[in-house]
Length: 378
Ligand SMILES: Nc1ncnc2c1ncn2[C@@H]1O[C@H](COP(=O)(O)OP(=O)(O)OP(=O)(O)O)[C@@H](O)[C@H]1O
Image (tube, helix red, strand yellow):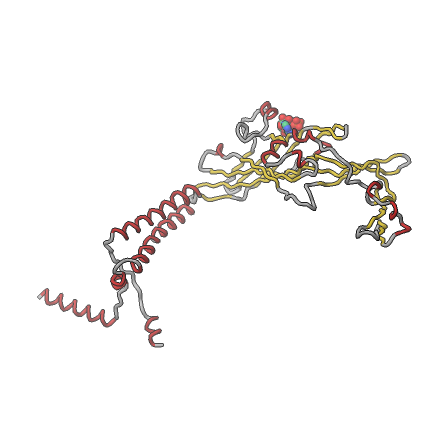
């Protein structure tokens, strides 16, 4: 107990011990050099730790698709094949359709008559009734067949279809404006000197036309490592990523977008690709309402904008310089470990480094020193 109290009332002060060892000196300098190199090359030059970063990018995306294709002898253009029409950052280009024409309100089998066993259809043989549905459970299998009340005839998902091959040549125009609010910096992906002739004729590629804002669907799929013929039947989701990584200490002209492309939906055996339904309604005499139902398989494009901008600032610069200088001291820690544990004569080094001095010893030494000094003066 008394020992603990004594230990508590002690004071440690740093004592410098100069070790004349070229091995230890070399290790110390190498460690210091490595730490300094890391801070200068990685932290300052690569990570630009002297800059303040703005990652809260604000962005607007406008898109426009052009092209036309043939589906079942009908010429379809972008008004038929692009949804939504407003040119948003997420849009779909239809590549395949299941069209169910002349639907009218009535009773009919839930699936197409061709795939239905007629023996079990009909309200008179029902086993259970759901809302707007009368179903008969087959005694031979777990499946059941239903007659619906709704829009008839029902859609048949099994009819053979031919995807619209021309979609591969459709072009997508992307207009992207961004702003870094911290620096009040704005920029557009359309180059300031871009001409109408160039925009009408160019298509984006990774080499010569990296700033052309017109993208061919086939190229986008290729960049995303997809093949049009394998995705056209069921659709897919493609991400067009626009990256703005800007060093605003350099010229603003060097702040340019970089494009990358990726397939975003995962291939799945239960839900393949991307599809949606819509209908067009019309009336015929004497006022009966009909509709044409479309099940559309499409390539959905998601334009995703990300980025960050950096500019020199005194505060991060000072913080990182202090961190670098403090870290240089780590060399001493490593050398101390070697000195006190692995070098020959480490016990002597320990004794020199950690010296224990008692208060009364200190007083006696001071008295001795004073008397020596006095006698020398006399
Ligand atoms: N998907 C696209 N493919 C090729 N060029 C396009 C596409 N979308 C737009 N453009 C061209 O880019 C330029 C700018 O398009 P913007 O929509 O701003 O103008 P516009 O005159 O309304 O275009 P347009 O009437 O041709 O649709 C126009 O020259 C336009 O023809």
